[in-house]
Length: 305
Image (cartoon, rainbow, N blue to C red; front, side):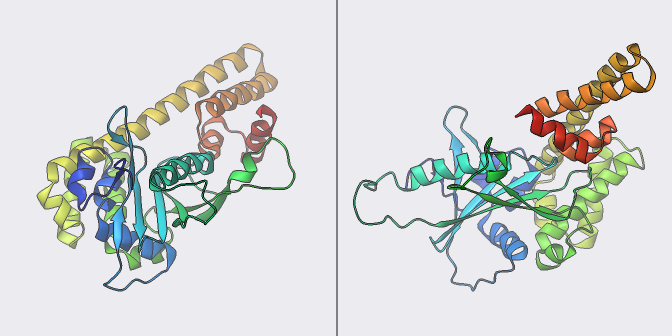
């Protein structure tokens, strides 16, 4: 197996590359398998073999995806954590797994007659953004991105699961670590959004409350500074997306008002939606910011292809 596939034995290697709290926590063999078992419903014994298998970006020496690992050399699981719903995840996962297989089979002769056995892939996106998902569990298909309909020779299915606190609660019941991550995020968000605390105060409050509840104690006590920095980075990225969305809305609204009343406002909404689609915002966020229905945005999206 090529050295680009990082088979790190613990989270220390992961900490060198990721500033995501999610990847920091679930970048270990034990927590990665615990998370997958909860999401998939599979049960593994103590003899299960797990190897972390994240892909590195050779230009920047950073990880390309959040969590990837193999189970008993027969299954490769790629997990992405998202705070926005990205409809391009099947295409992104296709690029990830193609590169992963390329590295995995580098020493093999792919032109030989005998089949080269490869691990079966599974693709999972775990969503914990603030915009509502159409459903707490959904499936995205690569085939939906094709410009022309017809026989589907290549498809890739991505399972999207909502891991906000209270959503898909069976996952949190099966994974104490996921329960801790959900709880920490929910407390910190409430402290900022509702109680109007500073980001630092919110993180400290969430840390103390989780420790009292016995959640994520290992991470919050040993790596308190790292956790603070990583969650602050995640929050600021979400805030940046929200600011960009509001700016797009204001610009579209201004153009719409110039053209007068209802007709101009509707056009402003459409222009806002078009700009946000071009920026890669998810459909639910566009609907919330622009005021257009999800159906109208999906129709607009189909005309842009």
